[in-house]
Amino acid sequence: MRLSVTCWSFPQLNLGEVAGLANVVGIEAIDLGYFYRSALDKRRLLSEPEAYGAEIAARLPVKVANLYHLFGRDTVERNLSSPLHRAENLADFRQALKFCAAAGAPTVFILPGVLNGAQSRRQALDETVESLKPLVAAAGEAGVTLCVEPHVHSYLETPALAAEMCERAKGTRLALDYAHFIVSGYRQEEIDLLAPYVGHAHLRQARPGALQAKLEEGTLNFSAMFATFRDAGFDGYLACEYVNQQYFDTIHDDVLSETIKMRDLFRAWTNS
Image 1 (tube, rainbow, N blue to C red):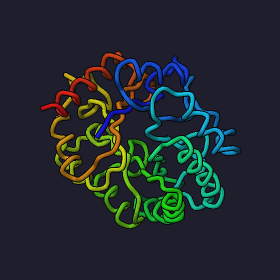
Image 2 (spheres, rainbow, N blue to C red):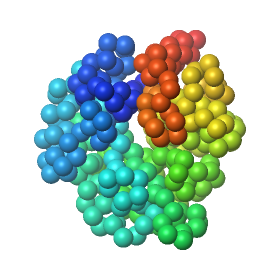
Image 3 (spheres, rainbow, N blue to C red):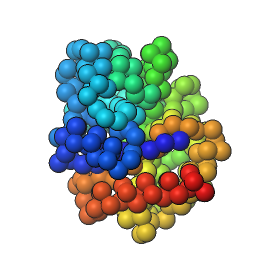
Image 4 (cartoon, helix red, strand yellow):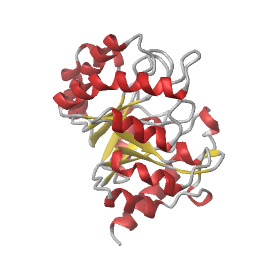
């Protein structure tokens, strides 16, 4: 396992600056997305993915760990639990996969969807599974791992539903952020059951009621988490994902300091 850091952790830095910062502090890779000053040019990514991916890989001093691909402009537009946009989502996803392959990103993560209209969780899951099947096939053809992130404010907010999604849409992996379950009161050992499905992971401290917390002020035992991932056979990237956002009031922490503390904790565990 190795560390990366998410570009959206530093909203005031451009892409080159985030990559330079990662390089300076000894984090070997970054996760890319469509947000803030570090945002990729989504229009160019979809129109000339291979040239753009190669260009990004050539100009960054660190590797690309992951692409966070959003189909629409937000978490609702063109979401996976709606059947309305499957053809155009698949077309865009094939372009995103070409970008990942050219940029050297082993994984891409997407969101599971939300409750559309009067949908139940079960109905939303059924639609997401059907949406995922052609996307998983396309990812397999491209040699990139497709990951889905269960998150608060989606419908996929329980470990049981997340596991069922992976079982029903074979080949789907998780971009697993324990914080999205911890905030709702799940215990770490309940989330550990998802370790066999992990394809990418996000690291930040949390506690019930708080999606993000300083390392010393949360309930997650990261040494235990790392061991759980190792024992499950995971050997991918762990992305430090402290953020400075209005979302769930995650705006109060010194992102750089918390990132360095997480880096040091992982290094200590790796060298123990």
